Length: 240
Image (cartoon, rainbow, N blue to C red; front, side, top):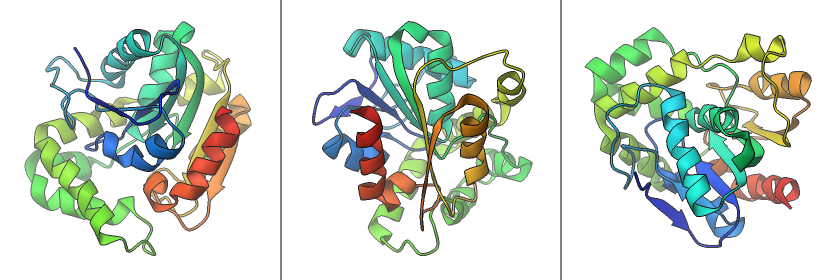
């Protein structure tokens, strides 16, 4: 399968979006830092793969993209995309030079009512989800609308699949017990007002894996859109 992607400056970086979103969440990073923003199957401009049911299934497509387009590079993932980034490394360590997790974690549990809502009351749940994505001090309505539009475009089935994959993703104990290790440079970026994946998720990687942790002030879960200059600075420092 050929994934839809956006590139403005070629660089060995692959950006992976979160649940119900698209490559567009990375527009500031793609433009300034460089690299490839991809749409996971069933999102944005990418065709769907009906056999997907897990983070690992998504990661297989990312591995194929990296090997086809750049051979080896950095994977940069937000939320669900962060889980996919971790699994991409575990599936194919030879194609990953480093990992950046943005608003993500080793375990991504989802409230049962959210899962139920995306499956059974999609429109209302989609609108409510926006309240948890952005810091309350962020008021760029057009940006918020673009994210909502992405979610609505994905639809109930894809959004439920994404959040269900998040809910099943859990590497926490394996990291703690050293059953799996990350042997490439790792950076974790998180907004200090992120209520979905709070800073403690990022600090876990710092404490257990020695990852570099950057906490961005006055930002929520969509930190790459809320504080693009700050995120880009941190990315450039890490990647170059």
